[in-house]
Image (tube, rainbow, N blue to C red):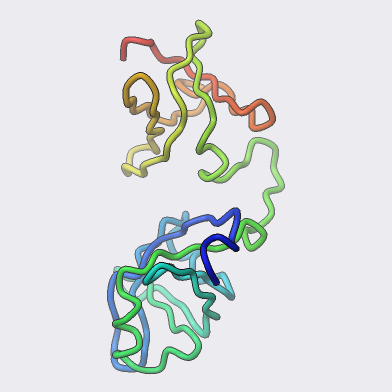
Amino acid sequence: MPLADLTDLIELGRVTGTYGLRGWIKVHSDTQPRSHITAYSRLLLYLAGEWKSWQIAQGRVQGKYIILKLQHCDDCTQAEVLIGARIAVTRADLPTLTAPGEYYWADLVGLIVCNLQGQSLGTVRHLLATGAQDVLVLSGARERLIPFVWQKIVHQVDLAQGRLLVDWDEDF
């Protein structure tokens, strides 16, 4: 599947290694919790300039790793080729959000961030998981890092208007 044919991809992680001799792969998962990556029946892997669809045969947490067995990946030689591949799903493959105020990180990318004084601080380029709290990475006049702390710092996420309202000084 060429990249140009795929729209609305949500990256979930990457292949970091192999596991055993029967084609299992180790993955770094950006899902929360990280084991949720095993719940998908199909993943898209980007390697050598193109996205390819893979069916998941099995998946589980194995110690500190997430491991997946993909259909038609039957030995460690086939699995080694996948090391470094980015892992994604289409937006249609994501679970439907049902509660008000729920959104995916991918929904925040591209939003304009304004402070309570109405000053534009930049646009969300991506988010980082730091362990303590998620961090918005903004691009604009300069790069800004703003902790995503609901109600203390982030006051409103308005997907319809394409903006985030934060309690953040322009000089930070």
